[in-house]
Length: 159
Image 1 (spheres, rainbow, N blue to C red):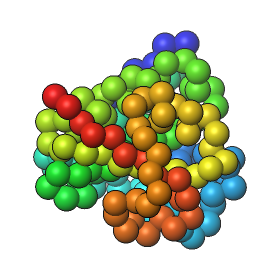
Image 2: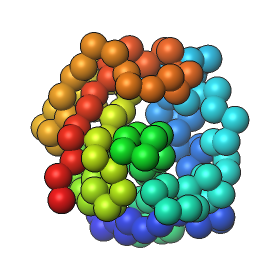
Image 3: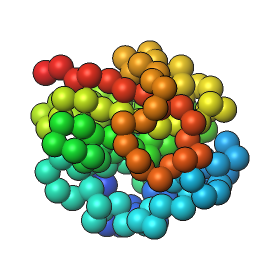
Image 4: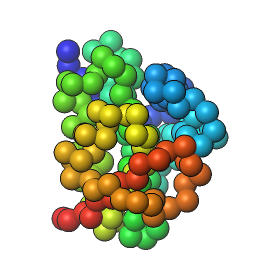
């Protein structure tokens, strides 16, 4: 199956929220302390609409949003890989690798360091982040409010 990856548009906001909530339910993360409780889940086209902030969606051949990932500002030197979720039918297709490449290439233009937070039970995601060059660290460099995410990673970006 072919996928298109493109920057988010306003028409995608509710579909992206649906993908994220579906993945969070799948991994038992539909509770406070995770992205589940983020008040802006259905407003990504607004949130990721300034220099240093960008979100991409994965669209299938029928035009359905089946995944996405973004880069969000944290400090002048540090960004966060945010809300990287793909539905099961997209996993293993290479779409996640392309999303990661887009996110990190974009981040390199603005930041020196990228971090992310995930959960231990997202085993495949943890392996993917390590394979993508991230290093597991003891403590997140930010207070994102995602206290339910128990595994932080960091990547030093190079142009």
